[in-house]
Length: 122
Image 1 (cartoon, rainbow, N blue to C red):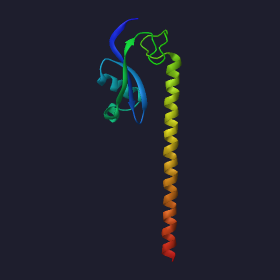
Image 2 (cartoon, rainbow, N blue to C red):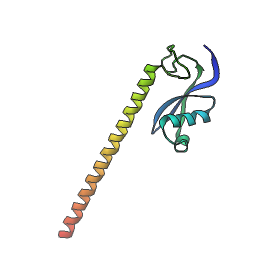
Image 3 (cartoon, rainbow, N blue to C red):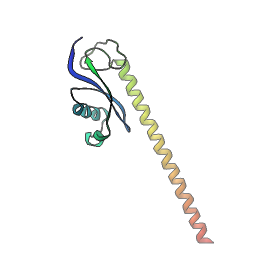
């Protein structure tokens, strides 16, 4: 198990969750995290927080610690799949919350309009 200058970075952003990336410095890690989340770096850079770092050991999963057959991957197949599913679930929940908020706003708007029309009629 060779140890390199690179580290495993666990980075968190409130709107995007946790990204586990491989990089030598914090700056490179933020760029990799933005790429992982699929957003422009400039939009998330200021909000990224470091949860922790670990030394990079090849073929050792950064999440579960098990050995796996891989090249430059930092997570085993099982942990990578679980991470993607967690991220997808967070996105679904955020969409539901936004939709619920929009529905409530429409309802309030309708009630306000009905109240105004009732006042005009009286």
